[in-house]
Length: 484
Image 1 (cartoon, rainbow, N blue to C red):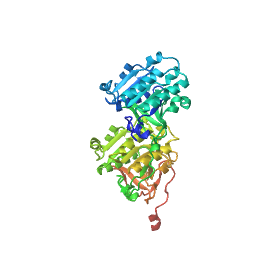
Image 2 (cartoon, rainbow, N blue to C red):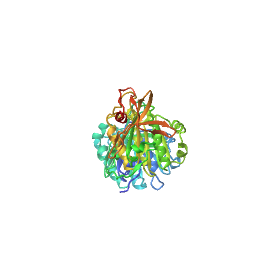
Image 3 (cartoon, rainbow, N blue to C red):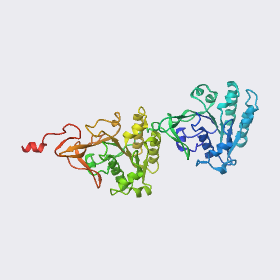
Image 4 (cartoon, one colour):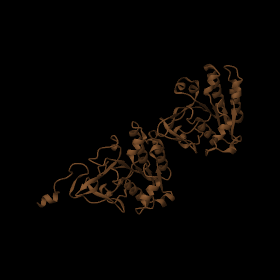
């Protein structure tokens, strides 16, 4: 089947391929949800001199305002006005029509559809047509419109400030081939726009609510990652070096290919440094890497890497490293997963570091959704053959408790890094707590931050306890007992 692209690849993905020529699509949503921007973006993306886009307005804002509001968008082409994209006002036809008579308006739209064969036609807004005619007259008019325009092959977009109640009984929704519901919710610190495909004939669309942002690039959609979970996971062989000196020996030779590794630890113990180790190793092997940080900015991370023998600046310049700092107040789970998904496509990023998960869970404020989201995100990365290195916060004092509301089971490997009381000093220790389907060393080893980053040492001797906890080992080791 041939599809008409919306001009936004991820929206086409959500729609199951795009918009079907000859279909009638209802775009519903409250004021400010992005209906007009989306419709105009579709117009400018598809209009040609042979097959124009015709944008009809009823009693909405004047054309001068519509065009003025487009000036800051990258999809807007002022030279296309008139030649490719044409704005037509239908208000006069409504003002002079008899009650229950939409014939002049329908005839105008149908005439243009059949005579000029446009690619896209928009009526903004159809919701207000209810103020002029009875439900029966509206049904007959829209039925005639959709059936006759369908013969032209044009995509007909009907925009309106429809409520969820309207969708249950409105004739527009019963006749529509596709229904796209937009919403705009208010929450601190950042408001949220979203999109849901309610109906899509002859297409397997992606279900669920998908995040929307309106930027200078226009109407951008970020598919819900739970809708993209691969059905089959390809087999993976081999090991991937972690980049942390001494750690691979504890992990049976490195990280199994495609695994997700969780590094737990309190503040300052070296979790971020372990991320940098992991990324630096990939860059040294000429891999493409993505580093996502919710706390440290790009400049702060580059300053940190400058203390080690890692030239991340050069790797950013040549495109092999992307560092993405996401302010916590601006975090959106769907935006995050879309960035990761796009980095896994094409020139595959084989290593992705996320620092850190505890901040991500707290800021997202989608507790009920998060387990399914995280499972899907890890699945998408594994299906692409990428290794994930994720950190998360643990408390400084006392034994490590399972954080993240029981989400540790989703990770293939779990590595705690903790503070220990080592004689009269505070030291660090690491152990491999879990590796799925892989043998690993179960011992406790010292670790420290050196010129090589986080580095694993030997088994500790005379450990008196874990910081702020009871004794970890208050007896001599086996060799001493044997000697005695």
